[in-house]
Image (spheres, rainbow, N blue to C red):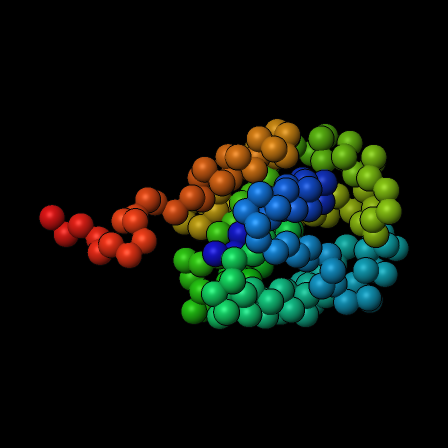
Length: 179
């Protein structure tokens, strides 16, 4: 399974994603590392990305997810995945059901406060409004879990793990009970 921890800047994607990956013993990747240098420079200058700038980034992320799922690897990815179309682009056709989204829902004032305290990141707080304007929270028909991103990371990890745990099956080596 690939778990994509999503939401706008300041939602806690990296913090929660890293903690979740560590608790599961899975690899973690941050989608920010997949941005082309031109996109990073654009955001650093306070200019929001358009769909044309997002396209190669989403393609690179989709390729990474496809590699994980093709190899049978579990992983956690922190990625904004703001629009339904972005989320759809991230899921390879042969990996439907293997990619789950966790939406960290956080209100705008808390996002702004978190971004104001953040240091050393290329995304300036001034771009938050553009992310909120772009955001399409996951619909009921999407494979997404919505959690309150204002909660502590440890609480979120526990809730995510509980919600995404596979249903209990027969012990290893025993056939399922058909009775």
